[in-house]
Image 1 (tube, one colour):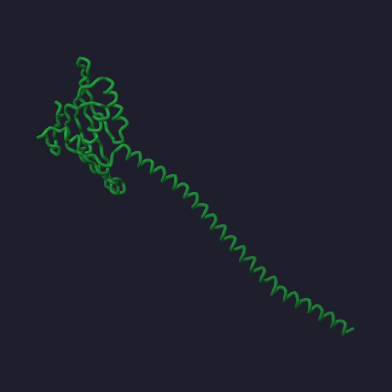
Image 2: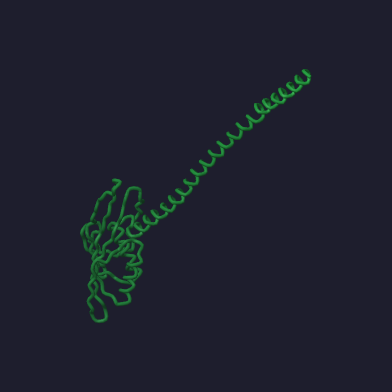
Length: 219
């Protein structure tokens, strides 16, 4: 009887020993691995949430960059990279060749320069050159000239225009303003006076003197 009890006790102890061994060498490592995996999953979920937020911010930033780029392009399309007497003369010469209008008088003002700073302390320079032109033309060529000014890539503003009918022609006195908008980092394109325009300027009429009036050689 005692032997049977001892045998049962040994069996129970053996079972307990097996349970302890399985728990220590089986369940505990699995539980540790499970907790480690759960922690890793949580970390991955957190990283995913961060990356998802960054992706949303990236899309927002990209849209803002596009919007700012469009604003800059709109401003630069309104104001040329450089405006000075040489470029004004070049534009006026091209204007004559394109519209078949012959300017009898061209007057250039001094270049006006305005300096300002934005909220970030960035210096911005704006300047303009005022031009007075006189010529005689007909209605169709005047319309061509106005279309030329309206469609020109540089910013040209008609300040005043006076029209006087004379026989079959229209006598025109027009004041134009050519603008420049410049800031640090913006490239200033090269400008020049075409040779054919120089050849048409009467001898003794300086190009570089300001203010000045240039008279067409045919006048």
